[in-house]
Length: 288
Image (cartoon, rainbow, N blue to C red):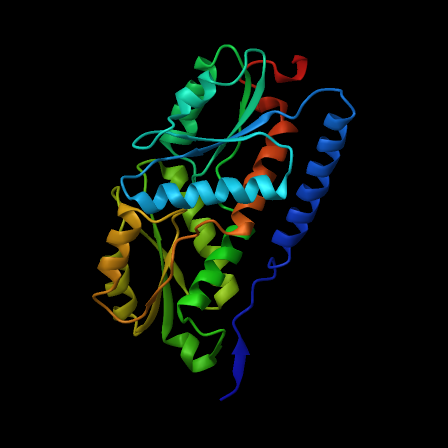
């Protein structure tokens, strides 16, 4: 039996290409700012918030990584709930007439992205604001998920026989919004291409299948070499509950995405993309 590479994703280089383009764009925007035309808008990273103290530590580390990658850019952290500072307070503290781009530290479309963030942006009447896309789906997230799986003990290579017996559960927060499910399934499909094994989403909340159900479904198909990919930006209740549900069966449990450099690059890519999209104007940013 010959070994076959698990790196089967034909889009594996896409993430790096997009990162390079975003880095060049960010450099160009910064040069314009330094020439005195106008300062860059603030990047307001919006986290959900968690009672788990590890979550706050993680997102603060991510803010520092963003600042390291884009020196001179004003970067603020705001939370939707549970942690301070709250997003509303962060926006209220920005200077009148200033500009800001809200970048959700969320992995799919859902109520927060579609309703809570636009409302917060509109309520900040003293600012010119835009709301960026959520982080997912995106090839950079697949890069990080793959790296976390390898760190947890998932093999870099599987034989053909090994692939027929393997599978990955992509644990995500869940939502009642069908577009959120669509986004998560797109990430699962990209990760399956990368690994060469089936990847199925499972949710910690909402009406869709949970982790235990996904594990049983794999077992029914004769797939017993399993792993849990933690599709969460930071440790928290959902990540912990998903890992506990999976721990009752065989396999490895990967860590959440965390303060990975690629997550910082993706946040900057969403920021840059929002600046180029006039449809994202909450108030007329172009005239600021």
